[in-house]
Length: 165
Image (cartoon, rainbow, N blue to C red):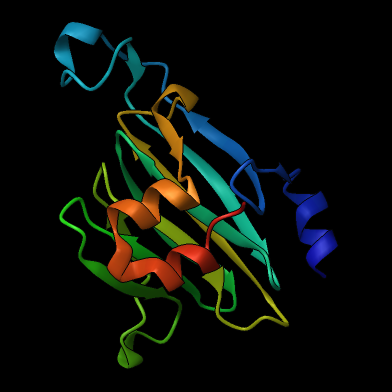
């Protein structure tokens, strides 16, 4: 079933782990002078992707210059691990069981380090990710294990679990 979903949605490997496909990129553009200083060039107003993890795959700790909203679609709940700029750790579970505190969507604020994993390692998680202003790889920073541990030593174990050497 997992391979069928990957094929049906035309998903490709993602650099942070898992699979993705961009499904929307706004044709409207925000000029650099209308954006916060953290952006060096113009940006589309918004973008969205399908994103899927299966089994033991994980999304490595990374951060974006834009806010990103994750929307749960199918499969196992997905766990988001977040470390704020101030070094506070939190965990969010996206899924269908809202009465058990799973959320259907959650927005990760720009500059937050985050990683993701499938809750049920025998399953998969399919989500959508919407970024605004729109995603550009120029705004993506993959976490370096040693730099993150140096910056957030209190979260050494979770950082080791969700970074690649």
